[in-house]
Length: 412
Image 1 (cartoon, rainbow, N blue to C red):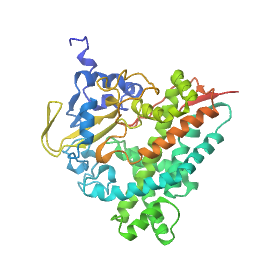
Image 2 (cartoon, rainbow, N blue to C red; image 1 turned 60 degrees about the horizontal axis):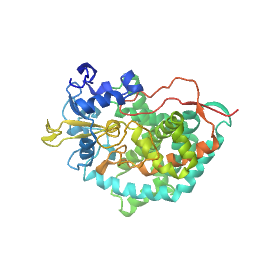
Image 3 (tube, rainbow, N blue to C red; image 1 turned 135 degrees about the vertical axis):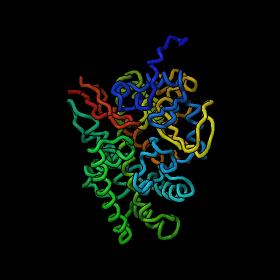
């Protein structure tokens, strides 16, 4: 190539830039840059998927309401289609993540309204939960920040919002880890068993919880939704309600855990930015946006083309799956100045870490509240925190970005 790039260095498959590949797991941004600069609209025939890496193409795609999400509408053999049950040809009752209008709007609108109202009502309580967990972490020495802070905060916060049994947080975390495997199209037999076991357990739990709140309402989101069902403001079946409450529990703790962990790691590896945050805690909101841009917990999202169209000059057929690399879009030099620089002091163009359009992440406001408060509170309590001498291990779940552990050290 004219710029000296060896064609062999350009990824040929979506899996070469996912957490399946050990090199990409450690550093996905180098191969994504190669694709963005040399093959920004890649067709992966093995996965029967288009893969986009440019900000302009991705932002246009996620905001285009004509695309669909329901996996059964995708072509046979594609990554999206692999989420469908082979025998029935359908997905078990999907959450709003995979629904199309009018069902998507019918469910999402009342759920989002109730969810956001409860978040605002509980904001002081959410911040108090964060304070308590950080204060309960080891005062000094070495500890795993993921285990002691990044994991317990989001799961307790979403549990408190939903109104689930807080004595079962470890189970909820395990079920979440199992259910999220439904988004892995190439699961192992062991992972599938974990998924099935977790899905059965979480389904039974929420069926019982919905019935209990209908009989005796409490001050929580499940009771809010049951009340909206009763008045007709939420035209949602119990199965639909259960599935979407489960999705809030799973998404509400796993990805926010990674947002916290990724952010702390970035601050500890960019001491100038940590000092900027300490000097001006008012930068916390902008810091969250920069963490989301630079190292977002969700690396990709997908859409299904309902008809023939062009993306970046490439012909896309009806029913073909289009994967959008959010991680790549957020490092595109055509949109972001010095995209590979982590800088919380610069106000940048809008990132796409939460996707966009009607399917933009429903949990975004809550994730922002949690991460903003954690970043400030954590470094107030541990002003001398530093990374311990330990290997960095990233999660292997494809299309997600988060740390298994984050060993840190603080004052003696």
